[in-house]
Length: 372
Image 1 (tube, rainbow, N blue to C red):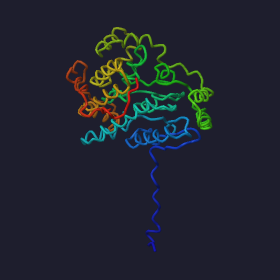
Image 2 (image 1 turned 90 degrees about the vertical axis):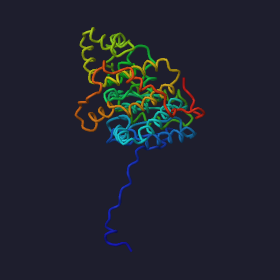
Image 3 (image 1 turned 90 degrees about the horizontal axis):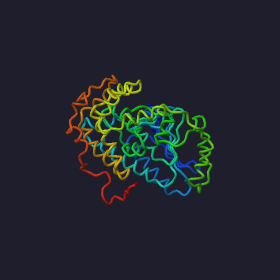
């Protein structure tokens, strides 16, 4: 018979799952479920997403897969940067394992055969872009704030950014990658990172309509169902600046971009200079080189492989740990970059990020085909 103390002991509630994988009607749902952490991705969540894709890909009752973020603040704010910071500091393999599996998941999404619908409501940053940008139907709302802010923490835009930010004409991708500026719904569509605009108050009805589709619904039927809820997006902030961005960022070195902005002297150029001067000089140079390589890359997988190789140098760098310290740990927003100026970043400093990986991201014979 249990003792009095045992009988009085309160039951311990089971922890909430970080990812909810379920089928609702004809839709396989992937719900990122860390709302207090803005649904930032952990390794367990990456594995959950992969398992969900495995399950839904072969389920004849699933017409399409839908990814959403729980809570009111956003789809996903990126990878769990504190885990990467602490793992790197402790010299564990946790950061490398996370990036390896995350990037392979990104490639998987790029090849996924069933319609993949992403609701990019609220904050969508870094890894949050990685779980949505490869979708067949990418939906933004008036609350969307999309960004690749990595140059502000001594890192570089990854998860295939050197692929998806270089598939369009012009330099909007270069601008977004170097500055880390937040993109509104219209900007995201203009940059090719989203497709459709749906006001946020219509999202519950949209999800219900998708779930009510027949299991045999194809791409066109799904598109028609979503179209019933779409509206023309509000103009983004970059539409009126596109000509200037294309002109000022059309260079292959950061120094040339800075010089062009200084010569221009417009309010936009001056504001952009002020933003760039807060970023890690090393990150700016590495990012631009990755983007220019990405323009010539044959596939998403090739870009992911370049980025994965570069993460080894990130974990050895000063600027990554300093950037995360200033943004996440101490939150003083005052990183002390080393080197502190562009002219202090040597060719050898940049070359360290472009050494071949000792363990290829997509080993030969792995069965991971390339999407061209």
